[in-house]
Amino acid sequence: MNPRAVYPINGQVLLGPNLQPYSAKWVPQSCSVHHHYHNHFFTRVGTLLSNAAAGSIGVNYGRIANNLPSPVNVVNLIKSQSINKIKLYDTNPSVLKSLSNTGIKVTVDLPNEFLPQASSRATFATAWVETNIAAYFPHTQIEAIAVGNEVFVDPHNTTKHLIAAMRNIHQALIKFNLDSFIKVSSPIALSALQNSYPSSSGSFKPDLIEPVFKPMLSFLRETSSYLMVNAYPFFAFESNADVISLDYALFRENPGVVDSGNGLRYFSLLDAQIDAVFAAMSALDYGDVPLVVTETGWPSKGDNNEIGASLENARGYNGNLIRRVLTGGGTPLRPKADLTVYLFALFNEDLKDGPTSERNYGLYYPNQVKVYDIPFTVDGLKSFRDSRSPVKQQPGGGGGGVGKSGNTDTWCVASGQAEKSKLQVGLDFACGEGGADCRSIQPGYTCYNPNTLLAHASYAFNSFYQKSKRAGGSCYFGGAAIISMENASFRPGTKLKGTSMMKSGSSSHSPENAGNMKLSFFSKVEVLI
Image (cartoon, rainbow, N blue to C red):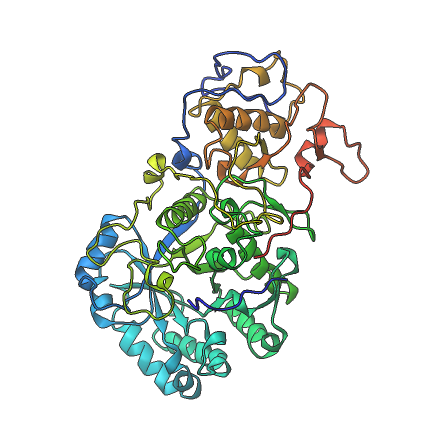
């Protein structure tokens, strides 16, 4: 992580398990999405997509400290929290041995200082792989090698060695028949982007395209690997707290930000940052290369000028991020690609240079006591609640933000971009375990028409959302729902208020066009990422 890097600104009938309509406590008199509050909270987010694919969470295990537990104790701590992915910043023998036969998947690092040798001497790369990888695999389940870390901002000018080093390390893996098991990549910082706002305009810095990114992305495609990206919404918020909503940065309820380039709506800053990288890759015709977020986090403490650094915000960011990843779904630009994300970091590291925040990204203190309590599993998410204190912006701020915490009325509607399978899973949950009022969308009732999955899902999603008192995360449904500032109406024979179902060559009012709905509730709101 480079803390001071400058990030660029630039139709189905809904039936229960026994084929009977779901029961409801009462039937509303119209099909508008009403506020009907009940004393029930969002407790089943973890089971929402229990039968669907989901993303995965890992943690970075940094060791720039003089007071950390032994590797054996650290591994026991990791196992106790059901963390099954760890990323290291070297190949420390004690750590790798401690991870042996644990089933924990490990990403190791070839430090920047070794890049010149690894690039110029194939024998060095072979010896390094033999000593640091082959000697431990498969008992220690090494799954990836990060060649360097944020090389483009390395003051020792190691960028020119990166591609050759990556290729030599991969060739060494081939010699030991490990290339089918272990991927090779290199983490980049968002400072490698020339443009990042809006996300659809994402592009890499011109001077890095030909010498680095084109050959790197070609290598990643050839080897079926992925691009490693370190992304920190904290840095963007800290520098632009007057225009970026804290709710937007912390995955909390917010109206969203519409990308003026493609019309996609973003509800989190991290999603926007990731899609800026996807857009940059697509601009070079490498849009098929996967991406893994190898670092992201939020500090629990900072200096007076480090706006937003607090224990509460750190807990909110990491807890909400875990929920967002483990309940499945990708980004607006790549909705089918579940995310793999590594939190930074396992411990507070007291010997790190820089501002106070640098020594306070840890999930644990060195004595293995939690800095704050967050879950790492789907089951743990059932009881997780973000405290959601009022957002504190800087004086005069918020002019370009996406809305602050408050009592503004909001509604939850199904996204026209969501897969039908996810809409159905969400609908089944809302009207089943979720206890939403769904009688009105049964055959013969007032809101059955239009008889489309999208319309029924929207009604059910909002019923659950309002019943949950609009709690954070209660309008997600695996990415199949979005929050609206307008009361979306589902009166028979009408389309969603404030939306467009227009399909080329078709009437915008025809029910069959509901699945092609492109939501447009909000005007453009510019937010820097």
